[in-house]
Image (tube, rainbow, N blue to C red; front, side):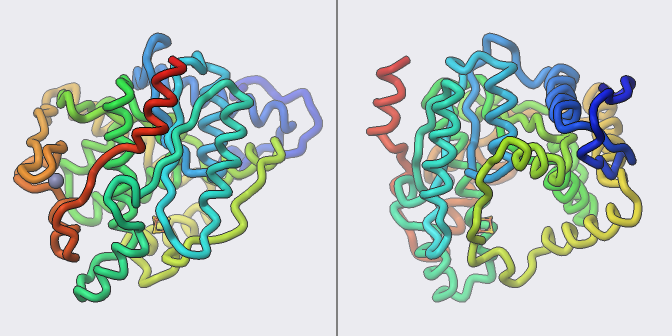
Length: 331
Ligand code: SF4
Ligand code: ZN
């Protein structure tokens, strides 16, 4: 599509490409970009079993819709995690996502932070406030969602876990690593970087070169029902990441295409470093407390450390066995 002029009526303006295309060509462009990204970085093979992290938002919808067209739906299982945040109608969004997945022949397991840890995200954050721990709710949320997705990926025997992080999310992570001076963290963001650890299911992000505005347009064209409530923690004490997000939005508005250039340039540099053996993926150590993979140099994982600090000493750490058994019985 990139080289061919759209023959249809111009309906969608792609700011970063400075061109207007029809809705059909726009959707095809997004789909082909995702397919090229998967192929270029060998994200998964046709025979691979995939576990998709589905949050219930527009990015998840795009991931679900396109993967159901380009990968065998029988080899895909969705996992949706309810955080447990008052006023946030996540359960409703997730039930909606589950019905969209069912229409595409994909099963979704619905689980929650409470199921895994024994407390909701809000309860954990309350403990954190009481302990005067200066940790953002989003930090707990992010660590827990990554952990739960990996846990399900492993118990369901997935070859890869797949998340719907878009280009804007990816650029924010890359810049955060650069601003912190964390070169190893930066290289780990490269899509060809894989861990050999058997307890860690490697994660891939096929929407890496799709702008957030493109995912929103794609979903809107399909009549996707957008979330109408926001998480209560979203604007709380802006994190470093939130400040980067604001800065990037401003830069992109003044220089369309800059976000894509940042991610593509860093991907090229870090791919080169990996191919030249600058960094070797090592077996991740296992946490002495919960047995899950943790970062190099750690004996206790960040999750056990944080939960211990807020007074949750014996988290449950388990899957939703009922849902797990249901999915396994139909496969
Ligand atoms: Fe989780 Fe933060 Fe997003 Fe709320 S805003 S859902 S706490 S990551
Ligand atoms: Zn642990």
